[in-house]
Amino acid sequence: SFWRSEAASIEGAVPGTALCRDPHARELVDRLLPAEELQTLLEAASSNDGKEQALLEGMRTAFMDRWVMDALGKRVRQVVLLGSGMDCRAFRMELPPQMTLIEVDEAAVHESKMAVLDSTGARARCKVRRQTVSIDSDLNSVKLVDAVASALNSQKPSLFLLDGALRTWPADARLAAVAAAAALAAEGSMIVGPAPTEDIAPVLQQAGFGRTNIINHHQLAKIYRRAMPETAKMLVAMHGPASGGSSPSRAREIKF
Image 1 (tube, rainbow, N blue to C red):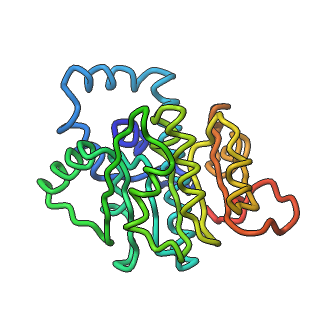
Image 2: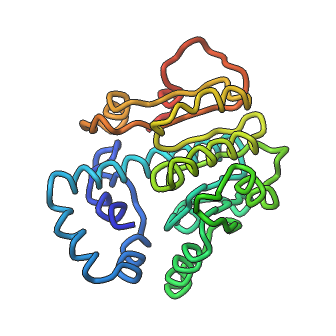
């Protein structure tokens, strides 16, 4: 939440607008971070590394927000957030009540976030299901599938956002998250998140994802009209047969 709140001061793809907006981020930071840790982050934010961290967080947030809206336009009504953490999309985005966001994380994470948001009077714009997992060495794709399955209509396409899972979970759990999303995905589903270092293409191809693209920092720089660090890479995978030739990025079809 801290770096997301810092990213609000960065200009987005549209001149005069913020790269990302999360009116709840600062409240979560102020209420949940120990004062010493917050002070350390505030000091780091003015450094070049801190500015890069804020830019990366803002880019990831804006990129995935746009995929949420793109999915909504395609009448996708299920979004699964693996590693939901302090995500506030259900509270800050203009989502219809027919949309269901399925947040998957540890119980303590859900409880901490909701304690803050409830105290501020924040209300979700759409349906939210919070599913609990233990992120430890025993977490595997079967447990993740079991956690999500009861909240998901497996016959309908979904958007899977793997931001937290692919950035903060241990390596084995990251692979488990990809495998679980692939196993749960109906045709027309999408997986979007930070590009993992592991080779996940075989898992996705076997599960029916005919298009798997890595959006690199050059492409992201064109989208957001600013230089991006070389580490900036986003995964976009589409369930269904490959089509449309060898276009390097489905993301280019989205208007920012």
